[in-house]
Length: 437
Image 1 (cartoon, helix red, strand yellow):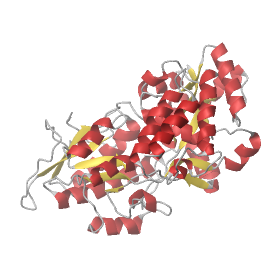
Image 2: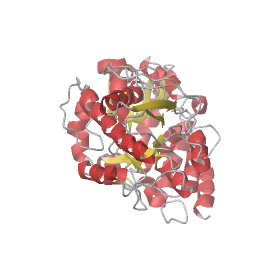
Image 3: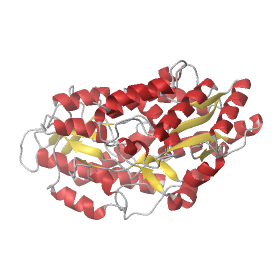
Image 4: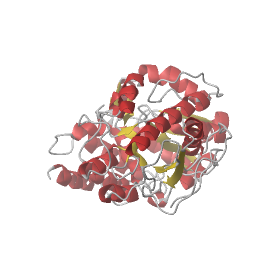
């Protein structure tokens, strides 16, 4: 599906929640087409070049930075017209198929799992020698090298985000009313909280497990309490590590304690976030990018906490081992685009301007490259807390697991763990089969 896009801030909601920051106004910067394939032909420098871009464009968090980047692109490269090809809430299934077949837009906002498919099928460009890559390397914020350079040493795309991570959000008002103390530090405390919230008719934890990645992320959150590498510990492993076995068992126990709604695997982001925003769910799991949206919807009633552990001593030791990996991501370029040089230049520009918006108008410090403009946003309290209390104290990030078949197994089986009747033992059995292939 392709839609016409202007640079004045579309306000839809989907994957990461509505944001509080306003988008700048600008003239329309895109023209609709009926297909995502590359359409522009070689032309004089002043001729119009049309490029299609696949990206998440769901809510304020994803649409406003993109729209801002498009508006800036129109100023900088007026001969470029871009068409949005919106991503779907399908756990990346459609774009994975397109990566394998090569039926791609010119530029694709993607991640390492999907990049691997594109690189193996030779359907995305390797950008190692592009001039934009050399400059991007110079401008990277410290610690973000893995966001640009893949584990195989190549560059496949330009990232806009720094190393992001998953946290647990909670409604302070609902916690107080139910007599639940925050932060929750242990699995037993989380089970007890689930029982108290269910007794009051409140969903304990809203999760959009229709998308498999969030169950994957939740499971890794518990795993990092025992193994800071997270799923990275599976690289080269012949069987499931003990830390992951324990995490799977903990999720199974939490499911039995009623932590998740019965229809969790049929729930999308819009539905799960609405439960949380409307005070019908006490907790919500998502990345730190959710902060502005939750703050906008819940004001002073919302805060976040780190993942609990098997006991308080483990929690205190591991609470700043973050559930997020600095894997490659960002704007990649189709190998079949008819304008490789222009598409590469636009991909790098879009990544920079996307980061610029997030830094200046949202106030997030977690961006890929240095931004030389001041923060103009009224920074949400939780984001300030993140910058003062969490980021300076981070001890580690989970590392990337490189086998796509293993990742698919984790996706499928972590989703199953939030459903009644699926056990940790089944999770381990299924994952071991993937590890031994």
